Image (cartoon, rainbow, N blue to C red; front, side, top):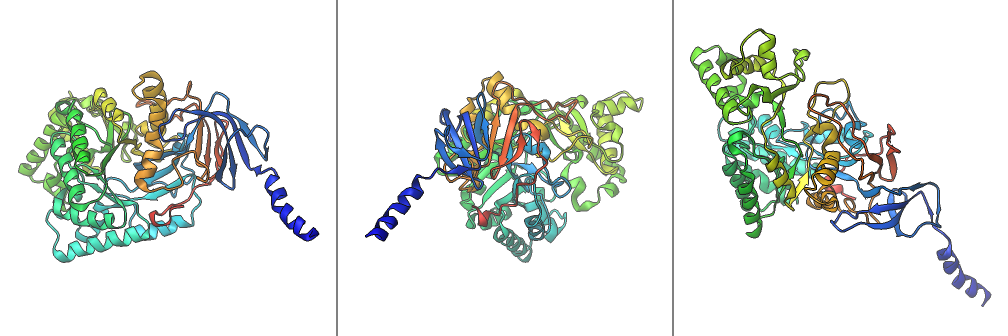
Length: 521
């Protein structure tokens, strides 16, 4: 009888013992990530996961934070990141300081190659944040077909399909295309549909840098919708925008197309960065045919072809990313002439003692490409389109930023400020969207899109990827003239329950890891 009583009493006594938390966050305004209003509750963390939510004022804990005046939200998920420097910048400070705890790399049809080997390398590399990858169509097509402007043979298409399958089995989150860039621009829609079906069969997504984002935007959106329809794969129109003066306002039409497609049962969403300038290479101003086969230099040596190339560049300056003004074309990275970084195409011509004109500007674009190209910022978008796209309920946030660190180049400010800019400028100042909606776009919406089952919400059992920020002060400081500035107001960032930012100070820790689609927590 005595032993029976002890056995009966032991579980009861054990259950009554106080939990000892690794960390308790007190008094924060907690936004769950689903778009609901905040609750004033405490959050307790054990072994890198959210263990309890409620009144934890009297609990035992190894560490606690009084977060009075701060917002607690799920860690931010960046849907579009250029992670190329990751092995050289594993701390990823420019991203972590924004509150980003997961970054999706491999956008625009590019990314690491060979894909599987690279992921295997990252598997054993300590990282400053969690990362996942898309497999890039351009990388695959170039590996199989080079830069040739033609349809693939059946054997070549089978080879590409095999490479997509291999990448998906290695843990890719889906397929990305860069149909504006070489060699993806040479691919017809049927090729993309065939490859997208492979990624979709592994529960992956299809993200598309559209074939055109200026003139031709409407047709490009329709193409992406058709790819989603024919392949049965969820679609993301990545860094959705309307670029070039002639296309300003066209987001009204593209968003209506998204709504119509969704009403027809096609699963389509968008991501966006909150700026009126884009960033890519100077080569985007050059007609694709001129770079086909990798013999651009030889073509420029032919006077007739040179004139045709120049005419195509002039058209793009006047009608597309050039924004009709050489001052709108700004250099971010110029390895062969660093003194041009931060300057515009107009500035360069003036520095050479010439009178700027669109015709001379086109000649300088050719010269820049022959010298090795440039990273280039194009100020050719309208603020009303940016706000309209941001308001759409199916828009997520993606920085399109490249991992950056002070002293290297002259990056687009999105590399340092995307997520704080949403919270400061578009929520607090412009009141474009509510704070709970902004957080949803940064957390549960992308987590759902990617199938991250234990991230993107403040919920018991979920991984403690969390951010605490001051809603009254959070702001981006990075500008187009002075980009190397970290944001303010991001007070704490936890990744797997470990501080990556604490009291506003970067901790130089490596709590992140590679996350494969087929190995999601």
